[in-house]
Amino acid sequence: MRSSRVTDDLDDLEAAVAAVRRRVDARPEMALILGSGLGPLAEAAEDAVVIDTVAVPGYPRSTVQGHHGRLVFGHLEGRSVVFVQGRVHLYEGHDVRAVTFPVRLVHALGARRLLVTNAAGGIHPNLHPGTLMLITSHINLAFAHPPVDGPWVEGRGGRAGDPYDPAWLDQAERLALAAGLPVRRGVYLWTQGPSYETKAEIRAFARMGADAVGMSTVPEVLQAQALGMRVLGISTITNPAAGLGTEPLAHDDVLAVGRRTRSALERLVRDVVRTA
Ligand code: HPA
Image (cartoon, helix red, strand yellow):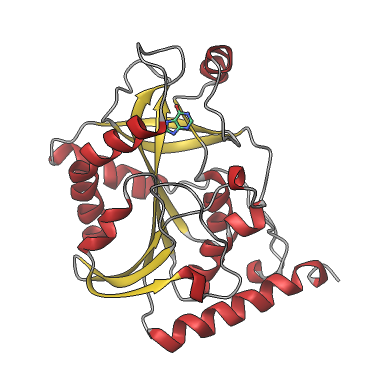
């Protein structure tokens, strides 16, 4: 049986859906996963119902400073959305199945689009701190993959091609340019972390074709793709990647630039949600 090794995960998912449904009967059209320093965007949600993820069976626990484990159901620009506030990462000791649990949950709750944001280090010289990068593709340098052969993909398994929806990306780019926001396209490279990269690694990643580097997003995106969801990924460039700037990297600086860029990101996210 192909599905037997994932049975416990499915049990978690059913219990998780039931726990959420006891609190809110929303059917979100879109899920938004928010990265470092960007979690407060969820405060923009109207009619918000906030569910602490510790109350959701099977939901992985977040431990990183600046990440709150909450699901915020509500409306943004008139659309029914769910914010996943406080994702978990491989570097916290979770496996990729746990990291992607929130995506399976929001899909089970009805979401068919995923908008995922993250903080990333800029590798391409045009990607200055404060730039928003629309993710065209990624490089999976953590070599990890979520489970895709369970019944939640109805036997279809992993999907070919890039998970990022080109039409949605084009639309987001038009909206960003119309709003005068600093936006670029680029390739996101996923490292497992938790260490920031060495200068030698960044030189290698640049030659591989990476424009930005970070420690999240790819597992969630792969899971969403396996579920047939439409995906848009936006990186906030928070720092020049290792060796490309003048200051050593520090998580506090990453959070600070994330906070400063929040209004541009919020504007873009609102426009994207309104027109989705
Ligand atoms: N490297 C990895 N992850 C990151 C970085 C970086 O430079 N900046 C923000 N997240």
